[in-house]
Amino acid sequence: MHVNVEYWHWLVFGMILIMVEIFIPSFTIFWFGLGAILVSGLMLMAKGLSFSSQLFVWAIASCGFTFLWFKYIRPKMTDRTKAGISREAAIGETGQVIRQPGQGSRGMVRFTTPLLGAEEWPFICDTTVGVGDRVSVVDISGNTLVVRKR
View 1 (tube, rainbow, N blue to C red):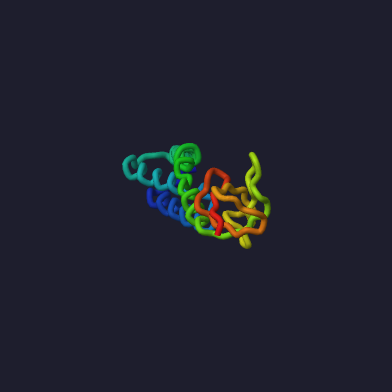
View 2: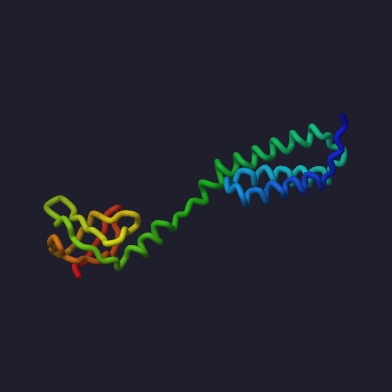
């Protein structure tokens, strides 16, 4: 059986797959669409490509694009600015001391609304604070807040 597939068939198929990505946000179908568009371009250059060769190139290109995305490109796109955004969101927030810092231990401060996903945070302070004192965040040191008595 001879199947006559033109370059524009692959182009339309690729565009449809890329549009399907809008409704199924896995960011995997996109690469199969890109593989189809690559086959379309290849068919413009090599007119006599058999259908089985087209399917083979599409499968290899799609898997290659998907592999490259998950192995190399996606890990480099991690959002390294989250810590800075979180830091800026925390500075100036006010909480109440629920555990006083002691010799070799950090104090604990509670916020009325969760701060960066938690209501209670360990803290350090340059001045002496007691349970019930109000403190405000001036900096973040690792997983510990640096606070100042209000």
